[in-house]
Length: 106
Image (cartoon, rainbow, N blue to C red; front, side, top):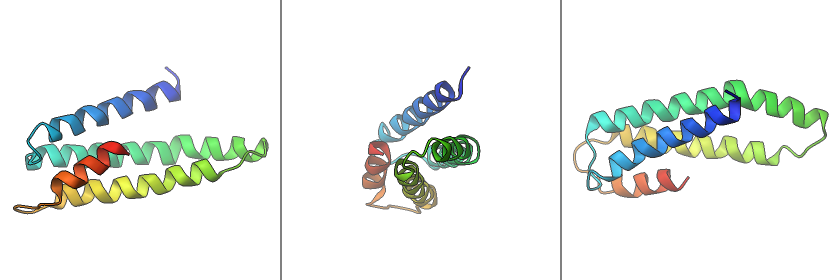
């Protein structure tokens, strides 16, 4: 299986986890949020440590603009922060549903 297929499958896995959290009426259980946080962190780590260096090197050789890669890295920072805040939410957090929505949109 090629790397892009694996990335797409990983994206689908994240989408399923987000859907599970959203089906919880905006109040997912801690375990669901912890699984989502772990999956987002793993996804980011794999893309940034394996795929992005390859893309960066090939783009440099081909003299391709690296702005899309830099944008993807910044999107990862946002996703990581949102997932971390979701997993760390305590008690009743009225921003939980909004964070889930933004995370899903990204």
